[in-house]
Picture 1 (tube, rainbow, N blue to C red):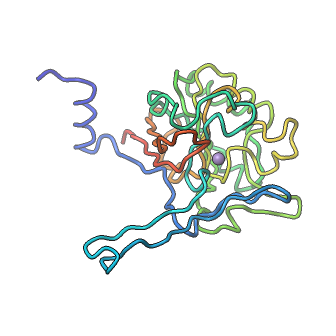
Picture 2 (picture 1 turned 90 degrees about the horizontal axis):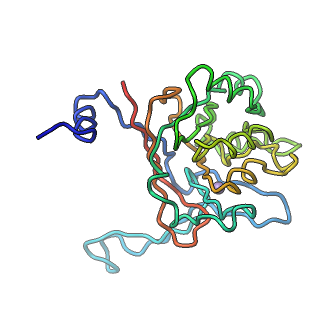
Length: 259
Ligand code: MN
C-alpha cells in the first residue's frame, strides 16, 4: 500500500512522533461559569439528575440528565451568539473543515503574570507573524496566558475586582485585526470568555465578540494545556455538539503536536 498523509500521521501517533494533547478542561458541577451584572440573565452551573444507577429504575445501567448552558466550560462560540453575527452559522451549520486546522499560539503568559488585565495588541500579533511567518489559511489563533492554572477555582478564574473582572484578552484594534485577517478561522483563550474582562467598557463593548463573530468566525474558551502547544506547527481539532440552532456548545478540543 502506498504511503499517504493519513497513514504517515497514524504511524507518527503510534511511534510518539506526534502527541495528542487534550486542550479541554474537565466539565463538572464546579466548572466556573460567566457572571454578568444586573439586570442580565445568567447561565447556570452544570447540574445532573439521576435516571438510574444499576437499581430499580435501570437494573443494569447508569445514566443521568444534564442541565448546562451552551456556554459552559471549554466551549465553542458560534457567530449567532452575537447580534452582529445573527445571520451567520449556528453550531450545527459550521463546516467541519473549519473545525480542523493549524493553530498559532501567542504567548502572553509572562505579561499576564505581571498584569492579569494584560491586553493583546496588533503589535503582538504582527510580531508573532514576523517571527513565525504569516498565518496559514484556516488558522485558529490561541492566546496563551497561563490562566488555565486557575480553572478549578471559580473566584480566581473569574477574578472579579471592584471594577469588574480582571482577565486578559484582545484590545479593540487587535479584535478588528483578528476579524479582518483572511486566514483566521477562530480565536481561543484560557479564560471564561474570548474578550478581556474589562471589555464591557470598551468601544464597541466586547469587541472580539462584536467583530469576530460578526465576521462569521468562531470563538473557543476555557482551554487547558495551552502551554503544551508550540507557537506554530500543531493541528487543532474542535468538536462542538452538532446542536441545531445552537449559539455555542461545550466542546472537546484536541491538538496534534509534533514531539
Ligand atoms: Mn461563549
